[in-house]
Image (tube, rainbow, N blue to C red):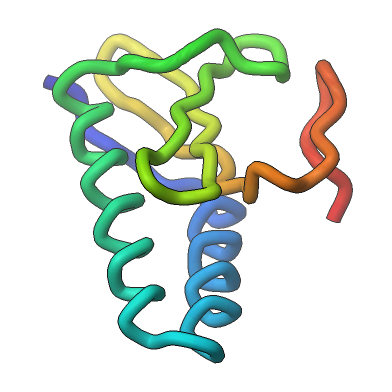
Length: 98
C-alpha cells in the first residue's frame, strides 16, 4: 500500500470546489468531499486510473462527481497533483488554464 500525498495545488482546488458547491448546497459539498477523499484513499490501495494528459501522470475520474484527480505514482506514494472539474478545457500535455 502506498501513502497518499496531496500537493498544495490539489488541496487548494479541492477546497475551492467545495466552497463553490457549499454555496448552493452544503450537503452536496459534503457528499462530493467524501467521494473525492474515498477515491484518493483507494488509489493508495490500488492505483487504478488511465494515463494522464500530462506526461508521467495518471487520471482517476471520481465516481458520481464531475471531478477528475490527476496523480503521479512512485514506489512509495501516490501524489494527488490536481482536482479538476470535468467541464474545464484541458488540452493534451497541459494542465487546464486557471
